[in-house]
Image (cartoon, rainbow, N blue to C red):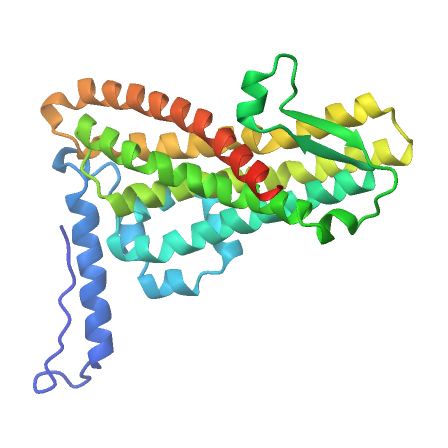
Length: 310
């Protein structure tokens, strides 16, 4: 481990350091120590450059990083972001930013989807889960024609804001429900981590899903506009609407991949004697958690949507 000794005694230095410079240097060295302690001694040489690069990023520099800068970092160097997420100081800066990226993207998606429904003169009618389970042949979601409604009708009666809030808050609720089990699975597999670190990785997966969704949204919106312009039949419009509702879950596969890679990378914190066996166990637990999260998320979104639409 290499550290730089700075002369901070005013009596022995011709250029004494300011107190804030000393604190910043101490924080940088603490980040270096933390990143290297999280890495086994046998593998420090393989990822030393990445660890030093992550540790060299001061929390103040992360604070100055714009949202688009963080998105660019996720797209270009996700491995560096995973290494950076191991720093406690960086976690406190990353969590609100990743949450803001996810919430804003899903809010934009919900607003776009509601605008498309209103433009196509259709709107989803929801059936309560209890009624759907007890009634044979009932449809959970069906799209009804609304030729008399204009673009602002569903915004004014609250049904469009309910759709936006369901997608934005439903995913947060699903993460909150599944997060304790995610943390427990990590400890069960022998990973050295904290609840704050697990939260950072979960929100990173959410932000990755949101970025993938924003990438697919223009293509989808261009296609549905063509259906509206050429007055496509109602059955085709309804089918495309169902695809729109499923689009966040399709994009969520990319977020699941991001979460999987970030958490599997923590296998290097395990005991070297049982790392190979434990890493295989960790991957199986992650698959189990992904299946649980995939099942909880649509239920959470639909429950919130149906409740707020009453």
